[in-house]
Structure formats: structure tokens, C-alpha cells
Image 1: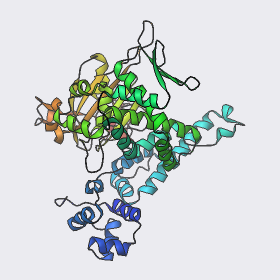
Image 2 (image 1 turned 120 degrees about the vertical axis):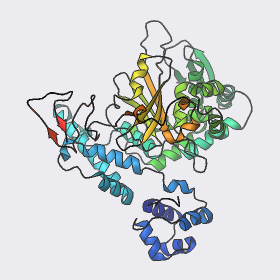
Image 3 (image 1 turned 30 degrees about the vertical axis):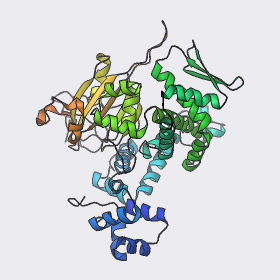
Image 4 (image 1 turned 45 degrees about the horizontal axis):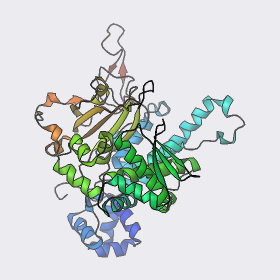
Amino acid sequence: MATQKLYAGAKLREQRLKLGQTQKLFAERLGVSLPYLNQMENNNRPVSTTVVLALAREFGMDVTELSAGDGERLVSDMQELLADPLFEGDMPPVADIRLAASNAPSLARAFIKLHQSYRQAHERLASLDEALGREDARATPSPWEEVRDFFHYCDNYIDAVDRAAERFATRDAGPIRARAIDALAEAGVSVSFTDMDSLRLFDPETQVLHISSRATSQTQTFQILLQVALRRQDPLLEATLDLARFHSPAARQIAKMGLANYFAGAALLPYGAFLAQAQSYRHDLEALSQHFGASIEQIAHRLSTLQRPGAKGLPFFFVRVDQAGTITKRHSATRLQFARFGGACPLWNVHRAFETPGSFLRQLAETPDGVRYISIARDISKSPGRFGAPVRRFAIALGCEVKHASALVYADGLDLSRDTAFEPIGISCRICTRKSCHQRAVPPLERHLVVDPDRRDILPYRVD
């Protein structure tokens, strides 16, 4: 940190308020003057090395949190909403957006929520014939989007739930599946493996948990652990939901299932043991899948959640898409942030994974900001379990910045020194600044378009 200027005023102020200290007292504990602290909190001065060390010494703070957080997410989200035609011609420069996200994150979040309300109201007005006379016609956040944003801005890591799952997974010896069944038995719930289409069905009258016998072993274990979370960890889940303060009962219910799923994944892949094994295997998804008895998707998703303060794993991005390119799961601990709405960039290798089921595809990619990544993609289509049942088709991508390539087995044999090895990818066409892209769907709002009636290239316009 001493080699580069670190502006983290919002984080510094947030830490002080969390401790309930005045600027004067906080400055004394950090060994700096009151004016100096004030300047750092307002990003007029960078956070000094002395302050960084004092934060760790006096308050036990994980100082990596100063340079982490939701800054890039806010920048990406604001860029995307500013690409709305509503703001056409008024797109502020990226430097201004970064300044707003850094200096006034709460205001940036309020701006994002305001646009969400506008968009939802606009959609309701488009179907006014259905909305007229209905009490729920007023603009309210979509429960699904509200929950998605909750996990998005928690860095997809819920510390209390993660630690509770780790305690459950490590307190006794033996297979996690058997211990989960025993834990349910202690609560008066028996487990039955039943030939049915549903993956999990709990009967509250008979206190029997039915698990599909057609599902894979990994899915069965996961669903049993999910029921453990709902049955044995309900007070913890409810307390976490109270802190989140969701706007609607529907959002709270969706979030509760999300937290139960989180517990199941964290118990199946306990943080400490999983992090150590991931580093030992150099993040080989197949080796980790065999070691922990989990699916490839469960392993990849868990790798993207290893953000525990003081014990962080490799910063990965993780995305799951369907055949239409719609993002159904997304998370990024890297600078790469996904579009909140719509599909992923068609130049990503995740779309090609459907063509080679069962195989890993590797891609070296570069985003418009010049950051380079290594990405792996694989088809993870779900077996229906019986003839004639529909197949759920998905593909996942997992990646990190190329500077971490030595810790990734999938980087072996790739020529990272050759510039032409990195394919240009983007986030969303409306905010992508690339002047030439053969897959561009819509023009970028920040650029001036030139239409030449005497010339037709790949695109019907030129971007200046």
C-alpha cells in the first residue's frame, strides 16, 4: 500500500462511525491531527502508511478492506443505469462517476434506487390496463432484484452464516451427509429418498423430508443441508434478515431461502478447509469436486465467496448463464462487474461452453479498461433424471485477473506475455467504449456516431 496512493475516505469514516468515536478521539488513536483525519475522510489526502498500520494495531482492522468493497460495483451499476436513453447526451465522464462512488457511496446507492423506481414505474405504465385499480400498482422494488442486490453488496459473503456452517461441518467427524441426517433426526425430522420430480419436499405434518432419488448425490446432500439450515439455524437466519430490512415480505422470504442455500454450500465446503485445499490443488475444480463430493458449480460458486476478512481467497468472478445468454447467477470479487440487466458479452467463452459439454474452455481476455483476466467456462446442464423430462441447460464461467495466474492450474501452458492472446470482451454494449466490435448489438451512448451512406462495414455506423 505504501507504493501507491490509497484514497479510502468513505471506508475510514465508516470504520470510525462503527466504533462510535468522534473525529477527535479517532485521530488521537491513529496518531494524526484532527485536520489531517478530516482531509483523509473527505479524500482530500490519501490514507497514509502510518494510519494503515495504526488501524491494524489499535482496532485489529483487516486493512485490505480499505482497498476493497463495493466501489467498482457502484461505478459499474451507475454506468449501466446512466446508459438508459433517459440520460442520452448527459453521460458524465467515468472519472466523475468514480469520484461520486468513492466520496459519496450512500448518495450513489440512493441514485441507483431512484432509477430502479423510475424504471419499475415506467414498466407499470406500459401495462396500464393491468395496473389500473390495483393497490400494488405503485412503484416498489422487485423482491428478486432487492435480494440479488443484498448479496451483491455483501460481497456474496455473509460472515455469521458462513461461520455457523463451518462450525456445524467441523464439530464432529464423519461424512457431512450422515451428520446432516442425524441433526435433522435430533429435531424430529426423518429423511426419505423418494422417486419424484421435486428435489426436496418437506411434510410438516409427518415431519418427513423427501429427497428425490433421481438427483445426484451432491444435490441430495445439498438439499438435506438446506433443510438443516431452515430447521436448526432459523434464529440466525431471521436475525440476519432483520438487519437487512427488506421492503416486502416476498423479498424477505426469497432472501431466507438464499441464506439457507448459503448455509448449505458453506457447510458442504467449510471455509478454512476448503480454502486450504483450493490453494493446494491450485483451484482445480474437478479435483476439489472429487475431494469434497460437491458439483462443479458448487465448487466454482464457493470459490467466488472466499472473502472472509483476514483470510481471503483468490478474488474470482463467477457467472452462470442460460442458452439465451441471460445471467442467472453473478458475483465478482474482482474489478470486473457484470451488467445488472440483460445478458453477458457474447465474446466471453461462457457462451461457447454449450458447444463442448463436459469440457473446460480457457480464455485470456481484456476489458476496455485494460485489465486482463483468465477465464474458464464449462457447460453444467442439469440431467432431468428421467426420460422425457426437460433438461435445464446452463454454463458457468470462473475467472480472475491474470496477475494471479500462477495460483491457477488452468493457466499452465498459456502464453501470458503475448498481447494478441487476450481477446477483447466487454460488459454491456451501451457502456462499452470499444470503437470496433463485430458483435456490438447497440451503439455506445458516450460516443458520437457517424453514418456514411456510401460505405457499409460490419456495423452500419462508425463510432468516433
